Length: 346
Length: 53
Image (cartoon, rainbow over all chains, first blue to last red; front, side):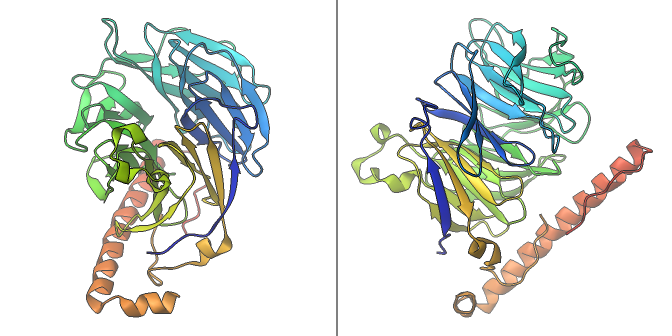
């Protein structure tokens, strides 16, 4: 097995007076200079990804911040959105950290995602207290961020198992979702119709869904210990990565043929023989050969979220332990051609 | 290192990997072509197409 050498800029968010509790999601902006993190400690932090210095801490949520996304506009990243257990979705300005708008719902917001253009947001609200799981799409007024329409453009309740993750596909108004049952589906946001599904995409809850740069495929992770690459149009499973631990996150590595997987079980729920830090490594798998190629240590508890720099030069992982770790790859990582000269299209 | 790695893999495995890469690249090329065409149909504007690596 090959091992990656990587220069690790491990920064402890507690040390930087940042997060005090487990991380829930992390995201790079389009240029990759900023890293957004959210946590059960109710705040959102934004960091300079090259040195771990904190740009800001954004307060305003009164509950676990479950999810964050930043618009994909290069050289801009004007806005980011967050969803929390306080039943709100918030729109923030990146430049000054001001909360521009708050939408309120009957239940917690579990997942948010911008569209490619940065002018729409999709969010999932939890099924709870007599309320069904709901998916809403909002138009974002990008000219004046503080003036948003209160009502969603589209709203629907996905039939069957509740949705846990979602994203916009390339096709207008088509949302790809992952579900508690392990299902992966395509919904028409306008009509709420389930256009297509793969009921057996996973055998357990889908924990993460990240798109390729061109949105033509995505990777999902699941508690069933597998990650899978799906075609976002046909939902055909293209690749499967079977690990031995429940997975919380899966990320695609731009410009390199690898996927990054993270997860792990809490020490309490596993046998003593499994009580080793090794359980909490980021695993690198070859995207095409479905073979594990390396691991990077870094956390003292399960890895909850992984994000790869948009240029593929570094990655970040956020753990149950409250740490965010950023690893910058060394040149050898980019030179290495462990399988020879086969050219692999990104 | 690469040479050592390569000598350890059998001809069979090399053939398998070649096939897997060919399949992957065929699928990627097809999808890239599709979205190129879709974009062309949907928008009349001239777009800056991404460089194909």
